[in-house]
Image 1 (spheres, rainbow, N blue to C red):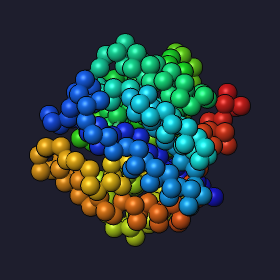
Image 2: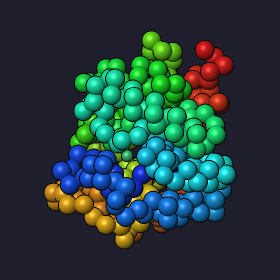
Image 3: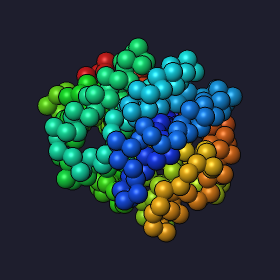
Image 4: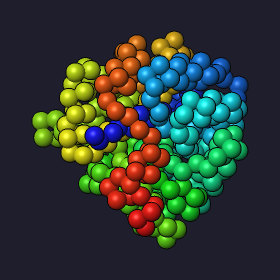
Length: 285
Ligand SMILES: [Zn+2]
């Protein structure tokens, strides 16, 4: 049976992109931290449901809370990288981006004591303006990526990109891409399986759209953030539309997550790689 992947981008409540009120990196250490409690509440549910997940740690978080990386591994989860400074990819040049993800991989591997295979970009911010993206991710030593949103999106998005897991050849070797899973609604590609979308749509719709993706032999890629299971976290100032997408229905996240973890078979990206999904097994190279 086709398995899905439940992923978490492990970052703080203030790691929100593309709003003027987002504090700069130099201010982060002085802000109240919520990630330990909120992330642990997710780990508790994963343990209760006996589900292994892929956890993309922001290396800034892994550097301060290396025990969270170790707790994740002890729970049987896969630890991957979300970069260090949480900047949109398309606002960086290749050298700056490569330095960020190389530093991040090193910090997370030191905390984990094991190799990091996967990377996810902040905000899925890979666009036509970043043609060097895959090559840089491979050059930093990653085996797979899950940063492509194959449709229109506020920040980023690659309309027309392949929507199934596939191999991307690069000058630094092959990379496996696990794109975000879009499903169709009224003939239009839409996303139902993470962040504000998952909090907005009713559970029955999310599940039926997930089943439709699985019927096409595609894994459903779910994503959440620890702040989304922490309704009491401080809010950043932003416009009404972003505020809605960022903060609506936070109390629905945990109940929906529990139901999804009970209803659908899950695996980590690493497990899908090792199983050779879509011909991606390194053994077939
Ligand atoms: Zn992020």
